[in-house]
Length: 127
Image 1 (cartoon, rainbow, N blue to C red):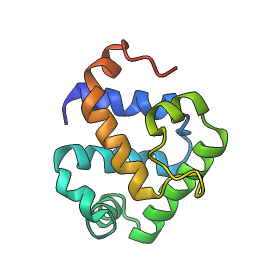
Image 2 (tube, rainbow, N blue to C red; image 1 turned 60 degrees about the vertical axis):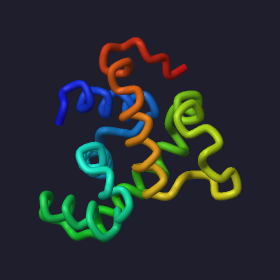
Image 3 (spheres, rainbow, N blue to C red; image 1 turned 90 degrees about the vertical axis):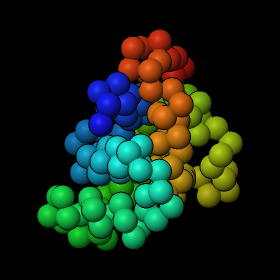
Image 4 (tube, rainbow, N blue to C red; image 1 turned 120 degrees about the horizontal axis):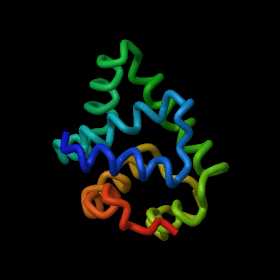
């Protein structure tokens, strides 16, 4: 994993307000890293990413899914609404509220892939 991309992932999660204390934080980082390394994994998040992450962390795929879902719920409720809106904008259904795990991971992966240099060097403005 490119150091700039790794830094950008962590800075982006910090900006939107994903709490480090949540197990889902670590799983989201892992999912985005894997998505950046191999975009095809984003097409089968449940069948590939959750299984890989669960094996690496000695957990089950359902616990990985739940931890990520919980982290998204907490972030959507308590996170930084300005940064969340800047990243997710209108790509997430207003009727549903928060994005699904797959939407969240895929959108963040795309966002980081397009902006990682500016995010890593601190020139990207989240607000």
